[in-house]
Image (cartoon, rainbow, N blue to C red; front, side):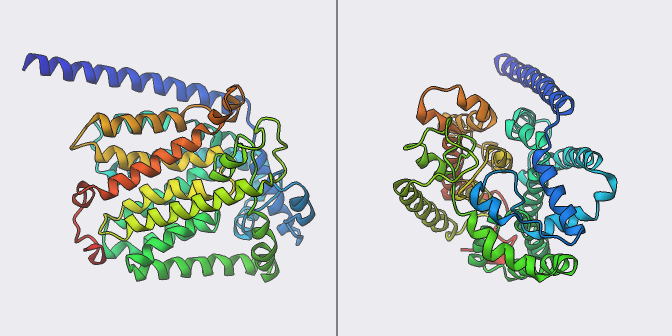
Length: 409
């Protein structure tokens, strides 16, 4: 008994020390963000908002065709329309306000994630999740550019919470995913899982909110911009780049043939063999993911499987997109509450370290070419662990199978 008590005390002290060190690291990184702000991407959105406010086209078709990954606005019009109503504050004030809101949402997301994963605050999985929130390099990169990933992470976490609450929260689930998809298109893949589960209210809410957002944007800037985005801008975004910051599967295969350090990161990388391999890999991921999700699985399984799958399959998956992997991390940590084994902990630790540590600057200093895709490997580990977790019997017992009638076998 004394040995067990001593071991518990040792573990508690170790976690406290790790939390303090993570907090110091996070504070130091925040100091760097506030001392040397770089809001290039945010300013691009503001420039698009100014164009819409002045009755001009926010899209630079010629620029996107010649240098698709340069600083061009390439989101749906809705984001620029919303920003256009905030321009009175000035770009600098608006950027810092957005950073403050992002940090607030980050804290709220952590609290909500504890509820979603059913983690008690004073337990080791909650402590590890808190450490992850503080040392996650994609979070710092997101703040540095005043990107939208904090908002998306909060919305995905809210959607995951709604998915476990039963029929009364199905509308919130669809609305949350629609709010993600109107900013970044790829979250719409979640609708395939909702359709397979026959969550009619969620699918209807998703479609209704997408239509609502589109109509609201059209009332401000007209229908021509909506058509322009889907018929002219969106097709351009199908290409990828071998640049090290792109950690999608397309970037991974492109780097077999092109040096990711020296390639011009503003241009498409066109390697037919790499593109073919990418399409084959995407097909495998989709088939495997939905083969597992069509089984009787807990609602949270879709978030553990499809979030890393979406980042792997997107033609361009910049490193700060991996901010979203904090949600699968929390859900996978929840699986370790009842059963802890090296077989489960080791791959999660490896995936954690691969995604949490470093960015494109780190990758550039690595001489081994295959190591330039190390964050892609982290995404693959998270995806495989999501599949494994969903196939485990414990995934079904995490929450009442009666939470949503359609989740029954």
